[in-house]
Image 1 (cartoon, rainbow, N blue to C red):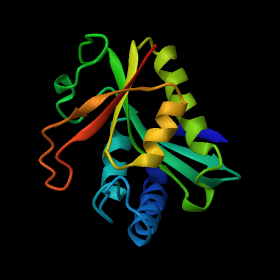
Image 2: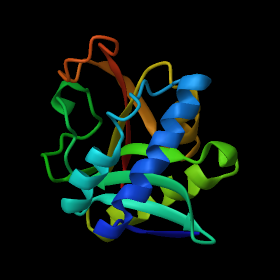
Image 3: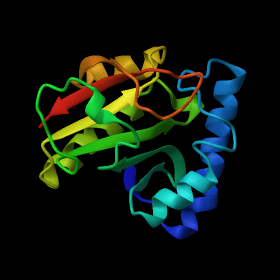
Image 4: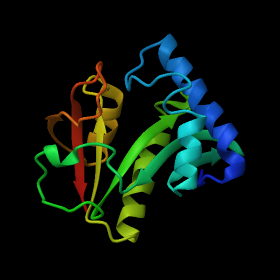
Length: 173
């Protein structure tokens, strides 16, 4: 598996990948409560690619996963009770981690999380933090399996009526 930053040429394809994932979630159980063609979507992929933090995972030149890795929590992370008090920029955050529906449960998510941990360490961050919708059991199990600690549910002030609280996770590096 190859994990690399998205390029401008990748934007339509990665946007379509997210659309397919969200459509599948809508037809089954939409654990992350993503919105088709809104988030994650080609528009968010374009924005994150321009910021240099949208990643794509390829196997045999096919997209098998995608995610965002940056130091922007996109919400009030200061509302969580973290084990270490870190300033913005001292930790990385993983967002919008998606796996191709036909490959979920095959270990790709674990490989992506391991990549994120190694990337954060290599760039001298002190922690990797993230948030998940509280009912997103598959994501919670993945992060806990990878060594993350649950630190509580908090309001991230994202003004999402159907997601008043997010479950917060951390891995100190």
